[in-house]
Length: 474
Ligand SMILES: [Zn+2]
Image (cartoon, rainbow, N blue to C red):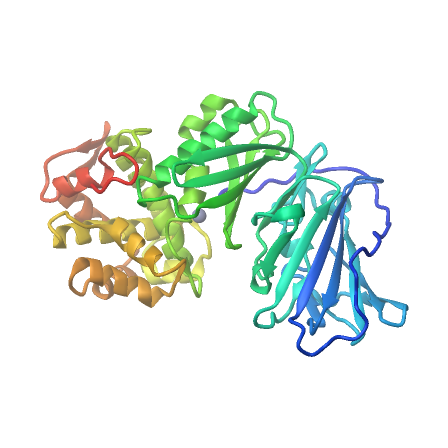
């Protein structure tokens, strides 16, 4: 992730409710699988909003919540006897009366933007297009019953959700798909990136002064190709990317994020006045896509996921030829210096447990990733490395515990490695391992910048950042 965007937007609030168009049976046979039918309607008048209707079928849950509460104050519950009750949303939660057939509410996108400014989660966009995170606007069951099915449809505009709709435009989802429903785009324009093994569906949610839609897709396509210098195949057969113009920013990417919807969804805000050539130095799209190359850590381990993505952002740009090996090492050393700045004598353990998403977290993680990669190569005669750990974990599914990551490292190393190396980093002042590691690699920093000289492990150094084509083993 990177800097945040905030700006202002305009317009007024109005309330209309959409009509219920799903057949609802009276009585619910106990054998009915629980199903929720979501009907989303993109509204433009008097200003942009999303009307949400959720129809309960079978033994559907009654307790709902907004994962990120705050923008919806109440919902309307429509009961079997024809009465309607207005229910306040308290701490994001709503308990529906027992005989609720369906609920409705309006997510007042433009009113939220006017009140809070452009926000990556609660609402942003430009012209007729809007961007919003499912966690902010889409109510979901507090507990998802096993086997629960969800049908979802969108009316009023072309939407880019993380999932692919089936025939008739209806999304058929599992209940758990709503737990993190990712990023959603409404309106805007589309382009598509086709890789040999994957497709990126892209929504461009507003106007750019100098960028064509084709230039946006070319940029994203190059980043996706660079991910394929780390993993043998692009990590998912299809992902979605939303690109949001950031007014007043001339540069390329301002901020990007991946959400762990299923499949993951990426959104990136890009300076509205950016030019195609600005993307040459951009790293944000690649960084976000590299998060797809490592497993989702459960529970989260931000220093490891950010460390892996940060390390590979420099490595992959060298492997593709977008930057020289020397430049990659300059970028890594510059990052280590920024991470070290103000870190005093804190141990890595202290740095990563106190700081959330600080530069120290990103760059101590990146240093550890580099060290792991080098040790794996040293122990295997430079035949295997950190890429193989990611490949191994991917073959075991999309998620991993921290412990399983360590086990995979040791399996690739052919001997215990992970715990001892981790302990060395965590217990000492952060970045203290850097000097010895770089000396062995033959990476020297002098008054004229970084130079690459012969060293004990300079062969490993050159393998890490050496040119390679996609899916090729070093
Ligand atoms: Zn990141």
